[in-house]
Length: 118
Image 1 (spheres, rainbow, N blue to C red):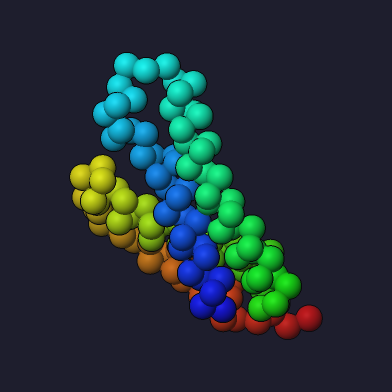
Image 2: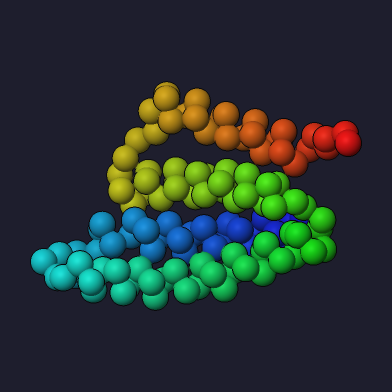
C-alpha cells in the first residue's frame, strides 16, 4: 500500500500547486484569469498522471474500496496543503485547523483499518 500512498502524495503536491500556487506566482500578477487557469491545468496534468495509477493500484491490486481511497486521498491532501500553506502562503496552523486535521486522521483510520462486517 506504500506505493499507493506515495503516488497520492505526489499527485497532491501537483494539485495543491495547481490550485493555490498561482496565488504566489508574481509573473501572473495583472495577467488575464484565463492564463492562470491554463497554467493550473498544465500543472494538474501531472497530478492526473499520478492520481489515476494510484487509484487503479489501490483498487485493483491492494483491494481498497473507492471509499477508502477517497478518505485516504483527502487526508493526504490536507497534509500536503498544511505544509504548502505554511511554507508557500506563509499561513500558520491554528488550533481549529489542527483539530480538523486530527479528525481527518481518525476518519482514515476508521475507513481503512476497521473492516465492516456484512
